[in-house]
Image 1: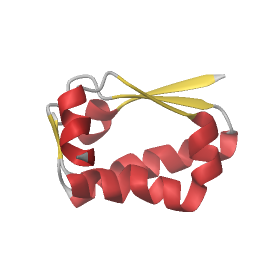
Image 2 (image 1 turned 135 degrees about the vertical axis):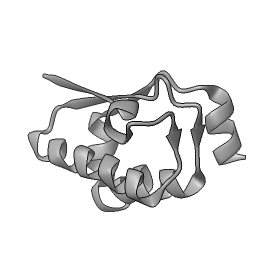
Image 3 (image 1 turned 120 degrees about the horizontal axis):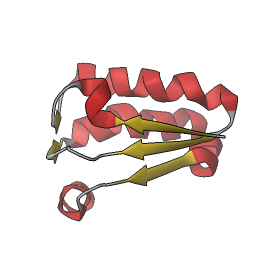
Image 4 (image 1 turned 180 degrees about the vertical axis):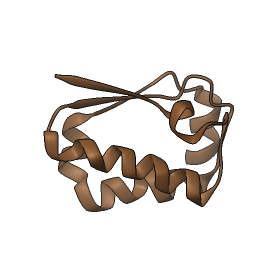
Length: 88
């Protein structure tokens, strides 16, 4: 079974920048982790992502649930420029 999450629907903006938005996103992800099913995260419609947003959401998830995140998360619809800016 799979669950699809559209980041923009959770944070209600195209800018994934704030700590509060990151925590809301993390809460949504943590809800689904115990179900051990694939979680498809769509970044469709997101135009900007801060490093702190990634750290406080996906980073926190990987710190505490690395195996589950590796096994069940699929990230889609991300603009390569957004990722390249965060990992370079």
